[in-house]
Length: 156
Image (cartoon, rainbow, N blue to C red; front, side, top):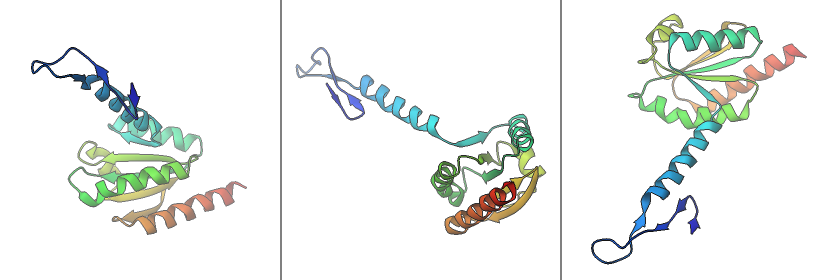
């Protein structure tokens, strides 16, 4: 029997004599659903200086604009911006969206002169075109819209 993301599997009666259900099957389905959602993410997590260099160089060489979210797990405004950043990434499939945890990849934060979280960088052709410090979804959307429009106008 299947209901939503849970699959209930009847097993041997438990020690009390009543029916027992396998929650492993339900947990497996739940984990698969989470993995599928994660696979759909358009935001790439930078976990090392090497991965930063790889994505930065690839995007720059291909003329692909980049939006970077510098974050920290202890910074609640940064964490609160994560779903919004995911949503932005889905809205602009022709832009590379990267997230960098400043505690995990200090070298990148230092190189990009990030001093507060959250910091968002909008980059094109290997340089910073715009910088937004703070958790302001309305301003972030406005700036990304303008950034992408300016690139599309220049490309036409």
